[in-house]
Length: 321
Ligand code: 2P0
Image (cartoon, rainbow, N blue to C red; front, side):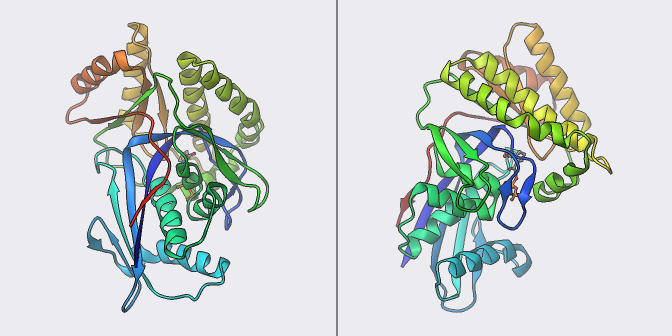
């Protein structure tokens, strides 16, 4: 018996950056994201005839690289009082390796969904979101399409995502810009832990509720300008607490700043666009359909070998056998 689930990645417009409970991945703030059509993960689970194995993009992974997947599966097996049997997990990331987008959101959303399908666990989307959250916080939001909100809650039962608008009509596009950077990676888990030493961490948390409200209003009012400005501010707040942590760190590279400057120049020229940046050096541009071509041309002339992928709203989890 084989079960397959698909989940799409999401990009946070109001970001999750800080945990209240690391083991359960209960966040200190609520977050809001857009699920993307262009990037997704397909995950299949089947019974193992021998050892548990994890294949990624057709390649069998080492035990070290499979540890997080099987630790997660074991956790779910225990949670549902299932026998801790061996499984074969096969994942394919349809995230162009060039996109500079993390895949843990789609990976753990697809894995949670495939697990429930495999064991015939009749989980509703709220429960599925809670299960995905335990694998990776941002995965809680990838259960849903369109815009979704992960309400922070204060326990395993109350911390989950829900849909704000599954089929938004908003003219909103994202350009994932991969800059040619070779940066040493600080994992999100580590980065958001270290960021708590910043003197601005408390203000960051304190602003969350009002920023979330403003973002919901921008979406409801179909106000691209308000959405873009706030997403950019929120991302910069997150990166400001990294820069002021003790010791400080940053995901920015010189090309990140160059890209920010280019976006400012584009805006000065009347091409409306905004940026958001996650736990890496690459930039994602928020823009409207009419400006996509010109923005891409500008990035291509500013940066050598830049790779750009355009995305818009994607769906929530789906299944196939
Ligand atoms: C987000 N990020 O809201 C934020 C913004 C990156 C920057 O969620 O530790 O892989 O596994 O819960 O979900 C990436 O962190 O972290 C992330 P864990 P996750 O999308």
